[in-house]
Amino acid sequence: MRVLVTGAGGRLGRVVLPRLRDEGWAVRATSRRARTGASEEWVVVDLATGEGLTEAVAGVDAVLHLASSPNRGRRTHAVDVLGTRRLVVAAGQVGVRHLVYVSIVGVDRVPIPYYRHKLAAEQVVAAGPVPWTVLRATQFPEFLDDMLRGASRLGPVLGDPAVLAQPVDPAEVADRLVRRLAAGPLHGIEEYGGPEVLRFDAAVRAWNAARRSRRPLLPVRIPGKTGRALRSGGLVTEATPTGARTWADHLADTYGGTGAR
Ligand SMILES: NC(=O)c1ccc[n+]([C@@H]2O[C@H](COP(=O)([O-])OP(=O)(O)OC[C@H]3O[C@@H](n4cnc5c(N)ncnc54)[C@H](OP(=O)(O)O)[C@@H]3O)[C@@H](O)[C@H]2O)c1
Image 1 (cartoon, rainbow, N blue to C red):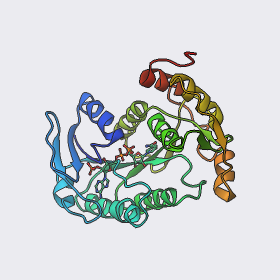
Image 2: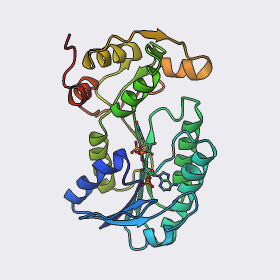
Image 3: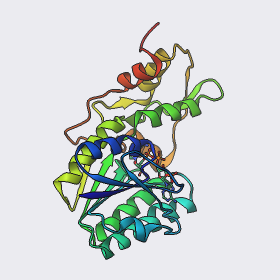
């Protein structure tokens, strides 16, 4: 069985590829630039233009769609919504039997532009000709870590203390995706989150402790519907099973220990 993986060189793609190989899939991987790999075939695909798509879907049984262009406005629309439509149409024309799309918990509740595009892409997948599954995952800890670094560029960590997050390890999301791919089309949406729900202020405390840093949290209440959605659990899920690796595990791996002082 051959699977096409879009966005295969990204954070999630990198941990998905070895798992697919271990499960016996022949893997064709896409990137916008030419790449080579020992155990997968790389093809050049640009979802914003459709370049390479016809060749990429030829002879594949399934598609794992990970490619995305977050937070880039019109570019996000061109890649995530129109690009997903191009992919779905191309896959339908060659009789692909299952398309798995990775989305984000909260795309239907938190009204930020990137999420609107992800939700529209889910709808494209569901309305398309290829039997489908959507897996919505919560935020990866690396994303939260990057965000905290960005939010503390000026010294204190700027953020809304009451926002709730549920970080999930991308390797565990990869395991779930590979299992979903093998299980066949769900014709529905599954959610998958990390093992614990954290308030932003607690996440910052653990982050500071792991980095032996004393950056104070400067509370900035996120206004409007977005703020309300983020504080009332728009990014978290009660779905089970969950991943097992915690924010503290990520911090220990990345910074060598938590609560060290
Ligand atoms: N990060 C999170 O916390 C999180 C949480 C839940 C779900 N997700 C979802 O998981 C998926 C993967 O996330 P990630 O963190 O692995 O993202 P990532 O590291 O940014 O990887 C996304 C990949 O998309 C590809 N891409 C961008 N523009 C493209 C275009 N025009 N045509 C074709 N490919 C294009 C890029 O590949 P090349 O540069 O090689 O072309 C990039 O490596 C996304 O759909 C995201 O929404 C992410």
